Image (tube, rainbow, N blue to C red; front, side, top):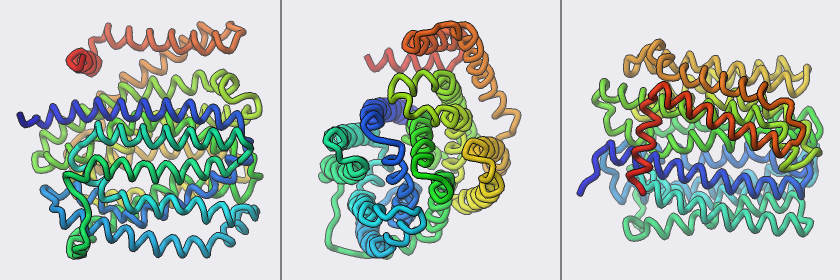
Length: 480
């Protein structure tokens, strides 16, 4: 029996939640073990390379995953063209980055980056062999298969990283972990897609030319988003010691892991579903509002909660040597609570074929953020992070203006959908903080805050008869 769009969406959200949740749990375990073994300087050395690998990854994919998703019925030839284009593009990019390695080491005042960067950059070259397969799985909402792919790759690469770190391999353990993750991920993608589609040597780049106008805007915006997400690391790495970079990288890692659990769940279905109903603005508006409510229901308690327990969490899991990352994590979590909404607005623009809106809004955002960071960097890392976070939240107003133009959704509707969850979560965290602040034992404090905050939030949702909670419970019961 053919699944309805609602059933596909629910199934996608379910497996998206499983995917994001289990992957972040594994990241949590591996992150704790590695952070105990490695120093802030080790994380800093690898962290400053992130922006280069991500930009290179943007260039090689060139937005064709989204381009293929927006095509109603992409053919095998479309996927094949993207496959070969990515391999050729990534080969050229790797050669450029290989010879740029000494310049990167000079900018960050760290000679070890020459050899390290040349090895780390292999990850994006290897990933080019799996982008078309990822696009096929994404287009066809193969959420369960994507979940298994991520779990297998993360588990095996994480174990390798931990073993190397325990044997004194320092930052090389992080480098090998990232390269192995991509390699194993590709093997799994081939396994799940080979019988449905696999590349051939019949190379025809005409689909690339047809998708180029749309995809190039996605490409530019992806690069802008990458710069946006890593500009603080890039500037901190140049102006501050590697240990300071490591502390920020550690804080940002935990923040990213937390909000990625929510945004990753939504990303599994947002663009494919919205793209299918883009010609029905009223239906698209209803679906978009429901996804926004679901996002708010999860994001605010998760991120405000992490901010609440960040002190005891960091001290108990990775130790006092990471104390300096705690205030940074607390601030980043507040901004992280709103990040998934930013993702939703972006997916709305992409699914509607408006990659121009997606591009220009992000370009304007990053230019203003870079200016703001440069103006505040002399005041220290903490002030930079606070300014960056406040601006990121305020920029949602620009995205809302564009969403109103696209589907007619009003700011009052968005606030009605999201503010009750934000206020409830904030109130719960405030009550929990004051109710538990006298507990001296860190482990007991962490456990008490998690239990009390969770029960209070669920109680408020039940008393208020929140439909999103009821739908989630009904779906879980149905899956049993």
